[in-house]
Image (tube, rainbow, N blue to C red):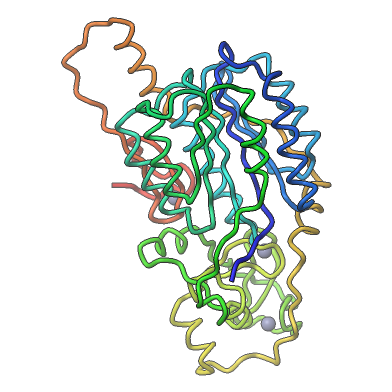
Length: 380
Ligand SMILES: [Zn+2]
Ligand SMILES: [Zn+2]
Ligand SMILES: [Zn+2]
C-alpha cells in the first residue's frame, strides 16, 4: 500500500552567484512550485538563501507561490556563497519546529548547489548524518541537484546525506538541464506503508523515541474552573491545558484521545485543537486505555480539525516574514578559509565539532554550550 500526503517543501538555494544567475534558474523553479501546487494546493513552500549577513528564510511555510518567488527575487541582489552544512542544519531544525506544531505532512528539502558553495567540512558529516537519522521518519526527504562534477568530494558527501533520506542526487552539467530534473522532482514522494499501518498503528524506532518524547510538551495545570474541551464536563479534577493553544482538557480525556492520535509512541500525541505534540505519564496513559482508571464521562466524539483549513487560518492571520539566522557552522568555514589563504598552520588544538540535542526539550544546537538556550537544562 502506498500513500501520498500533502508536502511542505523547503528549497535551499545554494547556487553561487558568480557562476549561476538567479535569472537562469528562476523559470525552472517557478515551474516546479506551480506544478506542485496544481497537483496539490495544500503543498506549502519555504526557502533558505545565504546572504552576506548569513542564512535567510521565511519563518513559516507558505501556500502562496507568488510570495515565495517574489521573496527569492528580492533576495537575489545579495545572494552570497552558501555554507552547505549550515544550511542543512538550519533546514532540519526549522522542520522539527514545524513538525512539533502540525501533523499529516511530508517534509522535503530540495538542495540546489554547484561547485562554488562552501564544502561540508569533514568533521561535520557525522553530526549531520546523526541529525538526519533522527528526522527521516517524520517522514523527511532530501533531494539534491548539483551543477558540477558528481565525483567530487563535495558530491560524495551530499550523496551520503541525500541517501539517508530516501532522496536522490542529480548531477547536471549545465543550468539548462535543471528544468527536466525539477519537473520530475515536482512529483509527490510516495511512502510505502508498512503492514502495521493497516492496523492503525504507527511506530517510531526505539533509538529515536527519547528525541520525540522530549520534543513533546507536558500539559500545564489549570486552577480556575473550566469546561473540558473533550468531554464538555465542568469538573476541575485533573484538568490541564495545552501550552500552545491554552485549550483545557482532563488528563484522563487526553489519555483516551491519545489512543487515536499518538505519533507512534502511545503516550505522545497531538492536541485535538492545535496539533501541537503533547505527552502524559506513560503508565497513566496505559492504565486509562486499559480501563484501569475510570473515565470521567462518556467521551464525546472529538472532531479533529482539518489540517489544511487550520494552516490557511494561521497564514491568513500572519504572512510569513524573512528571518536572518546566524550561520551555525560559520566558524568552521572561516577557519577553513584562513588555512586556504595561506596562513601558517598553527599547532592549534582542533575544534571539536558537535551537534547537541537537549535531553530535556530536544532543541538542537551547535558547539560547546553549558545550558540549553531553549529550556535552560544543564548540558554535560
Ligand atoms: Zn474531559
Ligand atoms: Zn493545543
Ligand atoms: Zn532544552
